[in-house]
Image (cartoon, rainbow, N blue to C red; front, side, top):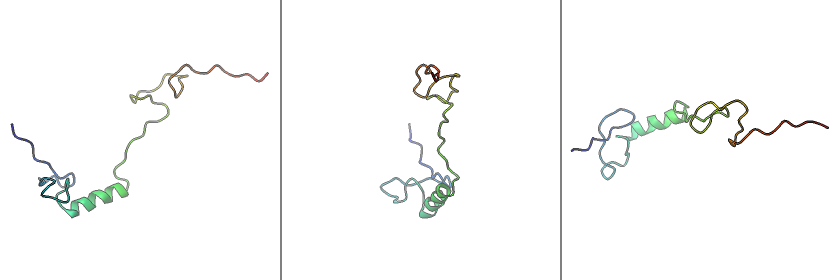
Length: 78
């Protein structure tokens, strides 16, 4: 069984190993700079879960709290 060659995430060319390539996992400084520009330009984003989602990304049932416990009873001003 042979290992699949690592591909540059920017241009998809084969990349030399980390020991042979100071730009790893990119093939060149140019591809490394292009990737950094995409991060800085907001093209890549890490999605954050909304307050309406549980840990699995599923919608929370109505009345559920952020801690996942039972909803607090309503308070009344007496």
